[in-house]
Structures are given as C-alpha cells and as structure tokens.
Image 1 (cartoon, rainbow, N blue to C red):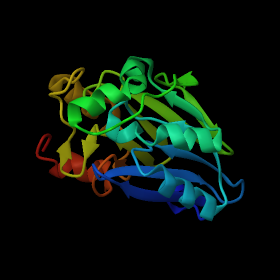
Image 2 (cartoon, rainbow, N blue to C red; image 1 turned 135 degrees about the vertical axis):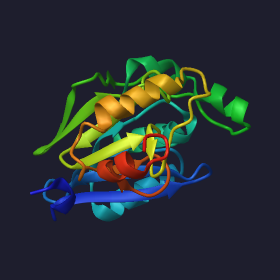
Image 3 (cartoon, rainbow, N blue to C red; image 1 turned 30 degrees about the vertical axis):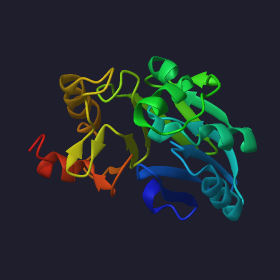
Length: 214
C-alpha cells in the first residue's frame, strides 16, 4: 500500500506565518508517534495540533537551516523533548538563527546544536515507516529531502511550477538543477511532492510542466 493512501498514516500540513511556510506533522495513528518537519514558526499552533492528535514527537527533521523553516524549533523541541536532525553543512546557519533574523528584520532566537546530523542515505525510523534522507544541495549547501514511500518532502528545493531561490549564501543554481534532475526526477512519476511553500505536486507533473525543466 502506498504511504499516501495508508489510513494509519497522519500527514498534517500547517502553513505558518510570516513566510507562509509549510510545517508537516507526519506520523502513525497506531503508534501515536510522529516527526515534525520544518517547524518554521507558530510553535504554539504546532504543539496544539500534536496534542489534539494525541501524538508523541520523536524527531524534528529539518530540510535546511533557513529561518523560515527553523524559527519554531526551539520551543517545540523544549516542550516535546524531540531530537533535532539537520545536515552538518547547515548547522552554523541553524544555530545562528538570530543573525538571519537581524538581516530579515525578524526577531529570532539562536538554536541549540542539533542532536544528530542527517547524511545522504540515512534512514530515520518511525515505527514501520522508513524516512530516507536525500542530500539535495542548491538552495543551501546542506539542503535535504525526506522520502517515505511515495511521499517526498522537498523543502525549498522544488515547488509546484518553480524551484527554490539560489541567490542566498550557499545557494547555487547549477547545483540545485542537478539535485532535482539526478535525485528527484529519478523517482517514480507518481511520487507526491510536499514542498516548503505552496501546494503539493508530483514528480511526474514537475518533469512535464515545471518551466525550469520542461
């Protein structure tokens, strides 16, 4: 059975302010465990959702270290005791979140160091769900995607009809394009893509219609 069609799987999408970033609560009803992917802001809202669903947060998984994907991490981490994982190449950006906030004119707290690093090929286990880590640099040097069956969390690598920006420190247009073509477009067309901003899409749709690749 596809993960996306499994009635035991929970996949909640919270669009959090002020950057309209997608935070994902991904878990299982039977085990009452979940991961939170990219708690970008509104930690109280994220916590209310988790509590309403009766879930225990096992991990906080970060696709990259930009502020709009990590600003809510500190409080969620403190309240849940979840372990935080990020790619080592984005660690400095993550822990120095206040520096990003200063540049953006957005108040932010620095983050404690991650509990573990996410490396290409790693598998994060959540009950009988295996979440694979795919290193996909381009938006940032340490950007990753998370793949679980036919569900891909793409962070700011790939959007519906677009791609992530590459004009920030650590970004590279050529590297991003290569990451998408070699690491994402090699997945089955029916793989659903849940991006860091905007609506979900699929690998097949983006291969055919995304103007950066079509």
